[in-house]
Length: 124
Image (cartoon, rainbow, N blue to C red; front, side):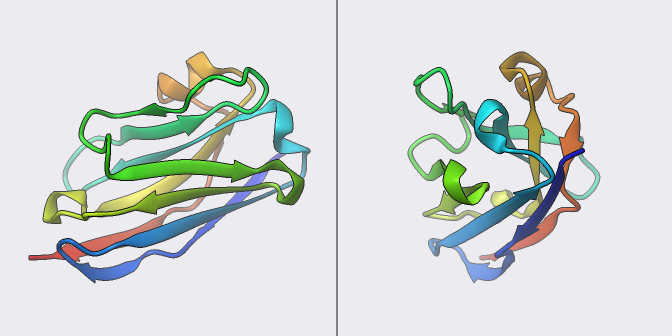
């Protein structure tokens, strides 16, 4: 079983930055794909970014965050991060960390493991 705990959310002005952290426990995460999703009020949860550790491939990003958000991970610490720059009011949402043994399931939005979420609010 994998437990994921997010932190780092908060209130920020448009154009500002935040770093979200995801602490994983229960398994060694190096063989898991890890990613971030978000859900704005009244909308469906959407994919934001994913990082695959074992393939050596590039991270995946939603078009809406490319060039502004950067996902990273530290397998030694079982941590994942989401650096968010140039934040916009439309980035306001609850952000969820997720993990799965396969990239496909993660990117499809059906990973095995979810965190509880952390609120990010961007004021205009």
